[in-house]
Structures are given as C-alpha cells and as structure tokens.
Length: 233
Image (cartoon, rainbow, N blue to C red; front, side):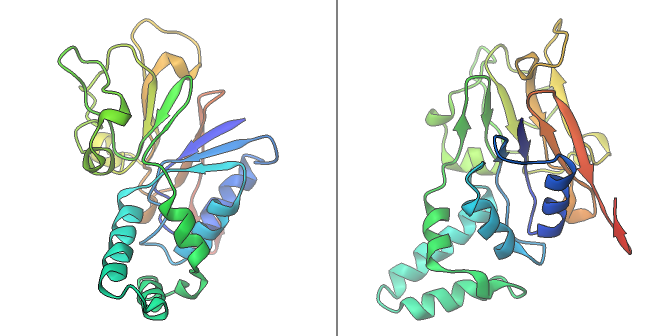
C-alpha cells in the first residue's frame, strides 16, 4: 500500500504508532510532504528514521528549508570550522540534537521540493493555478511558493483536470474547524481512486494537539493516532 502524510513535527512516537496501526511493512511506501522537524521533542530521532528508511520518500517543508538556510549561512561564515557548525546546528534541537550528524545533513540537503508520480503530486504548501485554472507544473514554480503558499488550501481553489495534489503546511482546522484530512473529490467522480480527487489537505494540526493522520493512496481512506494523557489512541 501507498500512504501520504505531512507535518509530523518531531512526534516520533506518534509516527511509530501510526505506522504500527496501518501495519506498514516491506512493499509499502510512505510519502512525507515535509515539516518533519521542529515543535516536537524528537525531531532528530524522527528525521534519522525517515531518511534512512528505504520505503519512505520525503520532500522538504519550510522548516527543513529554514534549517538548511541556517546551515548554508554557517558554512559561508565558518567554512573550515565544521565542529562549530555542527554544534550550532545541534543546539537548534534542545531535546535530541546530539543525534544530528553530517550524514543526516547531507541527506536532508538532497531532498526534493516535490515528488510527482503518475496519479498525484506531493508538495508541502501547494501549487498555483494558471489563467485557465489548471495546475502549474511544480518544476516551473518558485521554491517559496511550494514551501509557503497559503492560498491553495482554500476550498474555492479548484483545479481543472491535472493530478491530485497532496499537501500540508497549514492545519486543516483553519479551513473546517476540525483536525482531519480533507479530501476534495472531483465533480461527477465516484469511487475511491486517488485520480478522483483534485487535492488532499494533510496537516491535521499534530503540533497543536491534534491527531497525526495519513491517507492511504490506494484506498483513499484515512487513519489517525492521537497522544492522550497516560497512553495512546
């Protein structure tokens, strides 16, 4: 099975619980639409897992991009003091920064800003539409739009044709007042194929206390886990 998720924000335990709930195993694929790090306490533990898992495909979110921007700035100012650069980067994650190594930085730097498959596109924040309300190809879109856009999430933004766009970045509660994945089906389409949807909004507000959710691309069904006092749900 194929699954897509976004905005995990350092919640390693929740992520592991969700993978257990969907019985994620060899042959499955997980697409992660960015914002793996920050806010939660186990950003580096989560990043180490996801970037080293062969069945996980990640893209950059604005939080990863901001981290890389800091890294690039430090390397320009101290190009030969690798120890200082790494120590400064580790201090960005007070709970588990010691887990950050150069191998993870290299893998993070190699991540793309989008993934395009036959039926869907994964971006972090969204894609613009052209004058005919068709999706602009992601390779033609500026990095800042892919990472920070807050217009694509609006329900009235309805692309004509094109592949389904999976995105996160802004909590869904800002659209509907609930912490749930929003799947927008094309008019007149029936059945649960990913091609029947024009966009999937994935940020379930995990860092705000909402659940962590993922969508199964093959069945278009959602699964969730939520951290509760004294246990898991």
